[in-house]
Image 1 (cartoon, rainbow, N blue to C red):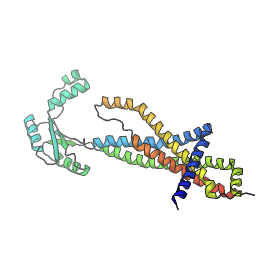
Image 2 (cartoon, rainbow, N blue to C red):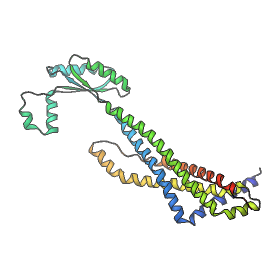
Image 3 (cartoon, helix red, strand yellow):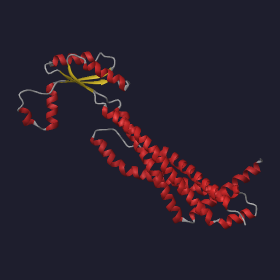
Image 4 (cartoon, rainbow, N blue to C red):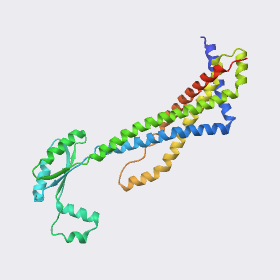
Length: 308
């Protein structure tokens, strides 16, 4: 194929592509309705995906925030508790140690609860001394649980507590969410495919006479199919861009309250938008679905239209 042939081939495709876009522009109401349906169908899985990625960001930070609380025996003195804390600092799988006496525990509880008068009536301090153990952040969950068992076996320790159940539940929720999003994205992608396919089917039926004339003068199915494929491409591409814009507007609306909530908990968390990633994937997914929907509609209905 010579350069001239390649140039003419690309030029014809460019003409058909722009002509298809012009057809959509000349039907603003129908085009807008179709794009809104596509945009809404793609928005839900895209929004859930961004939400899940942000939840994974939070859980990833919490992965390194596991702390083991060692509640000491009631008869343990502060000197003995501090000595035990110093001994634990030498353990290779422990990153940091902090000791909190029973009186400090009582003062902390008094500040949180505001039950000063009630606490004054107690004959003795009911709260034990606590050693806060921060395991090495590079350890896996199994190693941390093994460390918990070793600490619980110490003679001066009444109880060793590591609350990892909530983190395991969060992981399970994330895994279930990923599968749910995959199923939802598949179903909504199928709906986009059907919407575009039905729109192209109606366009084919409205142009039956034109198609018969084109075939009568020697036009091939490939020639007739081309503008409908580009129409499907435009529907999917523009629908993906509309989804991206709507997603950014939605994230902009909720980012303020989320930042305020994070500030109340003294967290450095900030909502990630994944704008660049979504700008690439959403129009691309829409384009693929648009071409596939158009191809299915054209393949099914075009062969039934023949010049009489």
